[in-house]
Length: 231
Image (cartoon, rainbow, N blue to C red):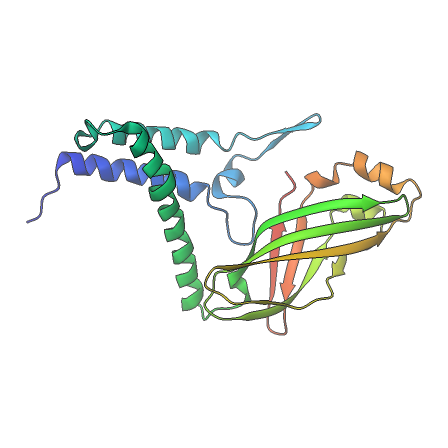
């Protein structure tokens, strides 16, 4: 019978706590929020936003690192090097294991368009009072194992709809991803004709960037919605 020493039990416990801190900060599929951000939502206060969701993961990380430092196997070891190893090796491996699990799930589900997600999304506006250019910089990640061909619709925030009277825009290009967690960055521009001559000024006063932006990936077989949270 294999027995586990008390020190090893504690090590597994603290690694488990560390893994929980990584898990709850892992971005959910097709959503720019993590688990903890859905539990502890950002708080809008006047002209600023307060993010409290990071407190719990930091507390869990502190508990796990402190616990590992106090193990017998850590006695006499350089704590700085141990800390750097945790941050640069162990935690990235935990996140990588979540990515691998996600890839395996999509493989079991026969790889579909749902394996494609948006990793990073940056939106900027420029233009005059009657014409507005929305610049999109999107990082596409395909967690599947095969290629995906699709097009993208962009559903505008409510503030933009108010001055444009259009719910969504179709991006002209068709996109191809190759699976295996490969990333592809695309940059597109959408020209919006505003129906109010003072639309630009009103728009920037509307806090449009605090509103959700929805992307719709689609082909002949599937439609996938991806939410980029404003706050």
